[in-house]
Amino acid sequence: MNKLENPVVEKDIVQVFIEGNPAFFARVESFLPDSKPNWWHVKLLVLQVPLHVVTWILRHEQINGEEFTMGGIPIRIEKVITPSESDITPQLEKKKEKTAKDNSEPREAKPAQEKQARILSLGEKKEI
Image 1: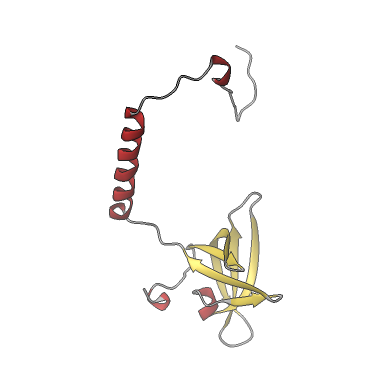
Image 2: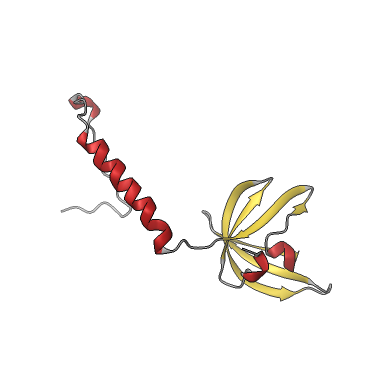
């Protein structure tokens, strides 16, 4: 698919690659024109903990996948396309087949000391 057929727009999720490796996901918050023609202030909400916002000044082509550098480091932005249901279904079917096959094979019993559970809570401890 030609990148210009499906350009990045506000609220899109993008993946940022640094030196060819996936680095982080971000949501495009806004595009504001720069004082230089054909350049844009691209505001990104970086989706990592903690959340933070960055603004990069980029050309339209860079926003849509053309590699650029920051401080000599190659960077590329790629729009994330949500897979359709038809793309996911074959993967789920393969996973179900594998799980069924794995469950049909006998397993070795593990000693009792290896079977331990941990209870995790995201809330405060409450007395009952």
